[in-house]
Image (cartoon, rainbow, N blue to C red; front, side):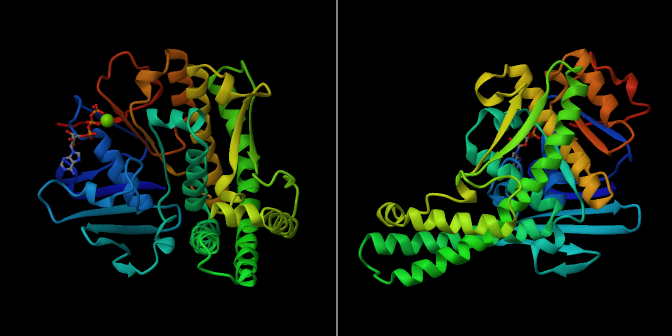
Length: 365
Ligand code: ATP
Ligand code: MG
């Protein structure tokens, strides 16, 4: 799939833009603070209806404006699509082929995009919450059921935690109602976890392949899921996982009531990245961590392709300057001819562009 034409009105510093993109490689070159990242962010928002930089959509509206409008024409192997997003201070609305969609989950997934920026290093270095956010975002865009169960889980978790707080303050007494909420939460948690296991298994396979490619085969990368309910195993059925989570809720009932919060479940789980069997979060060098993060993104491209039969867009923000020549070439080689790629850079020099035949270059000012 590729984004053929893109019209932007009032997105951050991009006042008005109407552009036709190349199906292969597009390079945005410009000095600092010109709008290169903003343009990638706008493409990402058109695909996912969320930004990679902020949770507050209002920030995206250009200073002094009332709304932002994004319109994209997407070519897929079977169909063409027109996607539209309107952001106002009250919220956002989305359209597919001029038909307004009441559910974002119907819209997300029409256009797939994978973004890689220097901050993605945090995926390896940062706190577990970032890795859970990563799973929710990335698995959500390829699997509507995942999107549904992950958001349902958040809803019921809030409900259960609110009730636990009432119990802890003595404002509620009925523990049967707590059991009902726990049972419902365990059922949804099992759906979330079994999908995380499945998608991470694929991701690990593709990421280790991409890592070997970029690092020229020096180490072996593996990715594992770490459930907070430690007796859950990768080959458990959804039913098994449900029973184990329910048992964990039951075991920890008194602690949960005392703390007023749910102490185990998908919202406490984590991912572990391992290089040659060693935890990368603790032991990998900066360069190794960067290569792992990049490999994960490249793996996502393959995962999206496996599940949807289409290659997603690849958005690379300031990535080239961070890689040495060998790795730049390996990266360009790996993606070339597969995905429509958007690359930002402040300087064309020093990058081995010869691998890409005829990229389209845009000067952003
Ligand atoms: P760099 O090379 O430093 O990464 P860039 O070209 O990627 O630069 P952007 O991050 O796209 O720069 O930002 C461009 C400008 O957009 C910045 O000067 C920023 O202040 C401005 N900006 C951010 N949000 C808004 C907004 N809501 N309205 C108007 N301008 C904004
Ligand atoms: Mg930038």
